[in-house]
Image (tube, rainbow, N blue to C red; front, side, top):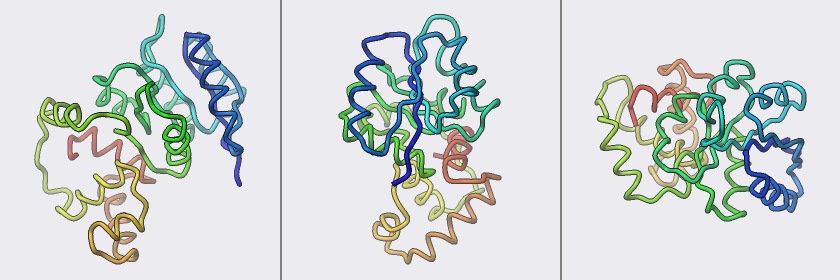
Length: 209
């Protein structure tokens, strides 16, 4: 089992210690460091080379969204999951480059699942967000219909955003896994993305989903 290197970025010591205790129960997780100061976060990412960063949003100085934007520019391969008390910054977080967006009341098992999903190139963007809140976010985004993706490709992209595997997508859409893989390749090509996470981020940026 591959070890996933994780950096915690949160200005509250109690939160960081709680996360560390929770995540260290997972055999495949290694907490490589904790950062309370956003000014030090970029240095620690360069020094510790984490694969996943758990990022708070509301912090003194530079907030987590702007820090995510800077981090993704400097270290594009590093995955960022926003872990926050607030559910209204989803769009901004995805536009900044975050691969995941979770609320702090998430259960340990769900958080571990989300970290593994992001590490594997999937994007649990709405895990722990209520259906009502998601509907409100979609309405406020003023989603613009475009012809760049077919209805099937849009359906696949929505499932990718929800963290579905190739097998799960094939089952839900009554397609073969080979067909799903071909469609995913076309989606990546059309959106100019290198992987599924980038495709979802680009789709959110373009308000396709």
